[in-house]
Amino acid sequence: MACCNGDLFPVKLSIALGAVTKEDASRDIHVLMKEAEDRMYRDKLMESKRVQTSIISSMRQILFEKKDETEEHTRRVKELATQVGLRLGLPSHVLEGLGLFATLHDIGKITVPETISHNPNTLSLEEWRVIWRHPEIGYRIAASCPELAGVAEAILCHHEWWDGTGYPRGLKGETIPLLSRILSVVDAYDVMTHGRPSRKPMSRERALDEIKKGAGTQFAPELVDVFLEVVSDTSGEQKTSHKQTVAPSPWSSLTSLPAKG
Image (cartoon, rainbow, N blue to C red):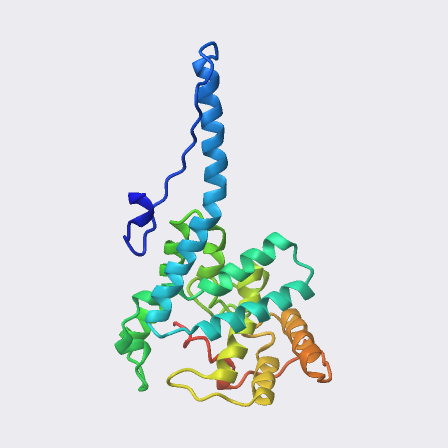
């Protein structure tokens, strides 16, 4: 009970137990010990999902308290990313990972001071360097937690660009994890249409134009087409292929940061 009632936020303690009673003196104690151990592992499996939920909730709470992300933004990005994943025919376990990744992709921002993240003015190079580190910090946080390790690589790469000019590793094309490529399009669209403290939202039509212009540079062209199909299905818009694109305008990088160089 003391373990359950402990409040060591953001760490939630848990103990898996397995018990058995020896009601017959003739029963081998080693058999009973094995039975108790089996029950303990069954309890641990059942508890692991609850622990994962607790860890994710704690991480989200920390991020939302920073006010860099909102629950509404996370919900929209998760739902839209899932729709793209379904359109791609991703298996259920990959879709589950995509949803987890969409929820925690910016967890590394918990280390960015609010004086930087909420600064409406032009940032200095040193301030940009602090922001540039958030994918790597998010990667280390996720990689250190078994329940989140499966999405750590996607978190590390979610600011990589299709043409290789993103960060932190300058990955290009299909060397960028698929989940990161999906989120890049979805997150950009949501930020453009809903804005941020220092950025006014733009119209849906203009945001879609910017997504189209970013195909082949910031975004994977094939995923832009899939994304447009998903959005079109919910709006009745005419679908158009955009694998041949023009250069992106400055607005196309709303969720990304200036290239490091």
